Length: 199
Image 1 (cartoon, rainbow, N blue to C red):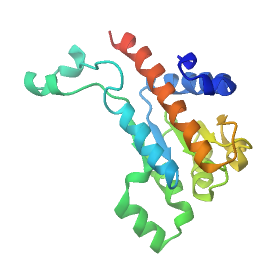
Image 2 (cartoon, one colour):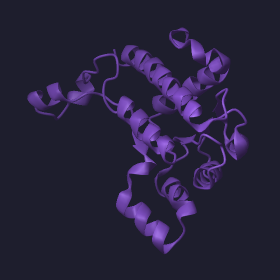
Image 3 (cartoon, rainbow, N blue to C red):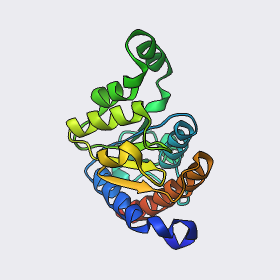
């Protein structure tokens, strides 16, 4: 799969590690929590969108998934990966940021929603976004593995991540341009595996 994205050859080992981590998470019915700021928040939402519906393969419900659903409804639904972009809690995040501390918004959500069967994907182009790093710290305290997507140095996030994909750039727009094919590649790899798994 990575051969479709020649720019990612330098990160091939880490992408494989990320795939292995995510596959194990979804096989045990764990969730993927996603966080990031600015363009990385948009990437978190984008990646969630690729996993919550079909990406490159049809995802018809299996017989067990159809159980209890009207046939017409079951025909319009797709199996999906359980993914929560922590960037989407607008009322909570604005209230918590105003009433408590914006640095801990993602950390609070990981505390509330994260379970040891889950994984946190933390996106930061520098690796030093304080609210993303606080979320990673809570994840580690709760025994959630952390997948980092960051720039060349990895920043503070690299030390907090179980798997860290550090792309070969330090310029924010270039880092973001690397991150998109990485999560597209992971989405394709996961979907191809789980299409066979559900069959």
